[in-house]
Length: 300
Image (cartoon, rainbow, N blue to C red):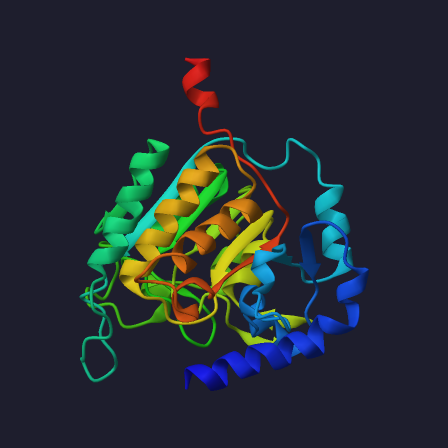
């Protein structure tokens, strides 16, 4: 199985990158994929020297040249410069289907993930029963960074949150009770420079001519400058290690694309998480941004 995957990644490199490899200058690669190619793990493509693409380039994706131009001409003060919303392990144990069966299990590693990030950034996350859909929607437009560690829908990447405790009926069964939908996101004016969707399949959605239409595209359409997604189901322990490395680099002031590359490298060079399935699902869409998390402390 592993050999067939590596062969496929080499074949994909030959199709996508080899024809233009001699034309690429610098260490940054911006890819505008077409259709199903949005779901390719570009970081793991292998050239003829068995070198991964992410070893040569910082990689990000963009929906179109028009979207890149819009980001480039966006006013400097449009996106928030401070504040973060960290959402982990929403309380979904009460969610049932039409037969009364439990839909989700809790994600203790997701809670651990956002608490770890909170310590790095000196920000208190919202978890468990506090991570309601109402609370998330209330805060979404007021922060520079958004991070979700929760269950994601396989088909759309939409996110399961804690149902509103004041809902009627008391047992949540409808998606509107607890799912952060594409429509919900599009109805919010997002001012975040970065949205991190640390949820399985958050990069998925309906494949159309203009790409994948899912929750990640909704965040971009609502105003987010960049979105970090996962292309497949992610290992809990590996994700915590990846995010620990990623946020340490981000907190140092490194650009998102460089922080992503270095976090992938740290896993790839580890004994436990060197396999592609652990480090390659993460993909950056949109602009390359930086943060100054210490600015607030200096202003005090």
